[in-house]
Image (tube, rainbow, N blue to C red):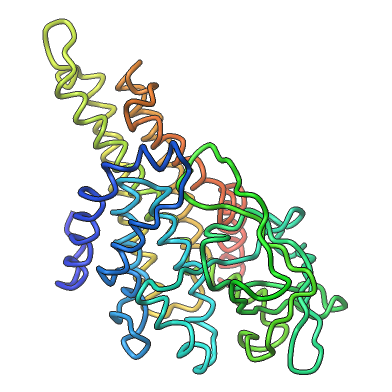
Length: 384
């Protein structure tokens, strides 16, 4: 479909696609097997200026928006969802600074991120605070011109590899979640450590670790916005980033469909390619239609974000929910079409299936997304 991209956006998409197909696709299986972080690919993305597509020009970026980031994420994920996450996870960690940071913070951190010199990460989830983000226990106590952070963040994308971390911590326990605040913490800060690298079912090229704070001293100047704004910063960040998860899911689904299509044209049974069987054709037709619908929704919500729509929690949740469910279904169907070959690790279909699953889980499980969608629908009805 023609999504009426600007010339610049079309160029960004084509460049990301070229890198994905020529540089990522040939090494995707290697990084999945070894679970290494794909630093050589991150360097290529940095040299291509793709890290800066959503960052304003005054901070060294290309001046695009969330849709631009989604275009890159989708194309990279079409080759490997795990490698793509090094890029997308940086976007997630950058958004709090981009949306709520002071001018000084933006000038200090965004140029390096835009050039790919430093990756970023977003630290919200904890052992007892997953779907219930309000249950975080990491604390930040102010002492003079600094804050002392204590606590552990869990399952943090890019942890250990990133240089810049946006962290949500409680500054006033008496106020509950309204007492949460957001901070920028740089890798190497005394009292900041990383747990073991997690071994995962999918997105194995992505680094996932605990981030542990033990009397970690953070300058007061690294407070994002003001005390008590942490939960709002986190929720606004997720509202803006979920179209990116949707884009990742679309890319994974498209990659799985690519595999199934190629296989169906070359696999011969009963003397003909299986693509001539109506049963297979109907599966392919449904897969293609579902992916296109997910892409249209993801792009539409990304454009809402770029237009500055203030209340888009419902639409953002819809995009993430629908696209991730589609990615999982399409990936499963791709494996089915390829039969025994689809189940073998010599072929990429099973990897797309493993990678697709996480899109239904992180940045809010799809059950939570349904809660958000329904709550907003009910609220809108009451206003009528």
